[in-house]
Length: 628
Ligand code: C2E
Ligand code: MG
Ligand code: MG
Image (tube, rainbow, N blue to C red; front, top):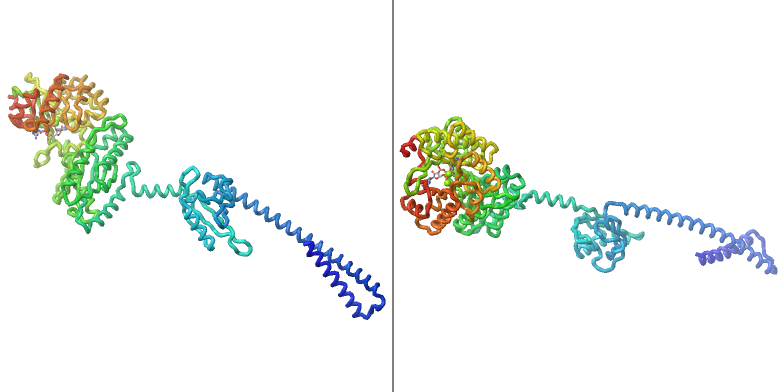
């Protein structure tokens, strides 16, 4: 600057002298040729003067220029500091990178989101240059895009310093210098982890059941469509199984929804562990599950997996301190035989399920074309049952149980029938599940109990000491009024409570043993006898019976049926009778159909027997004849 100034000064001085000489020449002021010295002095003086003026001008110009420059810089710095302050406080992540990808600036939001400090990031030369980026390839792609003048936009799954995943929506633009060259890259990014999680959750909820993690109904249908599309060309077959957990409503009502939820989770786990690899498990509704099972060319495979599932689910489990017995009812439709599209297949599997329900629970039913009529019968039946009690359509039959050695009648079991219009009497296994589902069993059960009490009164008038056994449903047994209702019925009829026996199935006894024991103790105080019905079905241990205040064990008819030919059945019966003897309980064999069975059972030290061998269930009037 100073050199330039001096040069300008000399040029200006010389210029000024030349200009003044030319001016003097022009106006005729001639320089005397001999006055060279004077001329030189004048020349010098003019030169010095001109230089001085030029210096003054230059100094002035420099001051003005410097002041302006100073002002500009101050303003720039002020603006920069304002920008930085704003950037620091911004919620978005702001990063400035130089051309090679090295970080020059990060704001606080970057530090917060990534867990890296400015110090760790700025000027970093070693890779990864942007350590929170998913990978180095993405950094390079971003560089290539931006350095070729294009913005880079992406949603990235990043990792913080501590390894946590977070998502950003990033926008990187090139920064240019005055000459238009790209020197830097400016990245602004927004953290969208919550939004992403929400999206993922919504996506998840769209396809999965949040409680069990199994597919939901929507995705089940979609997966079925996909599976069918794959199989359409090949010779592989497929089956759709839809199943309902039996009396799940009671589990919820009796033990609370937390236990209910746990039951559903267990069932979902059991299903997943039981079905084949590649099979699909879904929760279709509150207690409804679905399975898409691929099977080769053999129907038998489906039948066996279905039975396998049913058995796996039918078990006693301990949940939330409660013993719970779960059973399942299942309907199955086959592709391509029972439907060529997903909708039909699902509908037909549903229909098979309804059919299975109408046959009592804990069963598996395949779809068949004649089902439609029978299903509508079932729904029709549900409607008609609502008025059955009022219309006096129920009746009670009595089946004797007899001494196995003397064949003398020791008592009777009251068995309900439903007879509406001119139809045949309907078996309780067909309509009791509906009565239980609808809660009608409470009133109907009370009616049976009172009818049985009236019968006890009548038969025992002639000083016979005959017992009548009445079956109970879980819902009745757990009903808050139950004990009071029993005592009231006994009191109203004026009977000896010892002549009334209440039958509870093994599965009812085992659900929440503590509650069962306390309820049974109260019933014992009323004075009634208790039988455990269908004993030996399903549960490996018989020992729980020791804890129950009961009087009789009714050995399930499945053992009796096989007793003559199956040594296992005989040894189970022996185990039961000796256990019963040690506890001073009476044993009653159910379903005795032949003299051979009666004889063996007697040898196995069973006390009483009930079955067609002695008599089927008959109306009270006929029973009276049997007594005589
Ligand atoms: P359960 O209490 O085990 O009753 C015995 C069932 O076996 C009766 O069927 C009876 O008819 C049948 N049975 C008797 N002897 C033989 C035989 O020698 N061979 C064969 N194959 N079967 C025989 P039922 O009357 O159809 O009753 C079925 C079930 O319905 C009963 O089983 C009982 O659990 C339930 N039930 C009946 N009445 C009532 C009721 O009033 N209330 C409730 N909650 N359940 C009832
Ligand atoms: Mg019974
Ligand atoms: Mg039974």
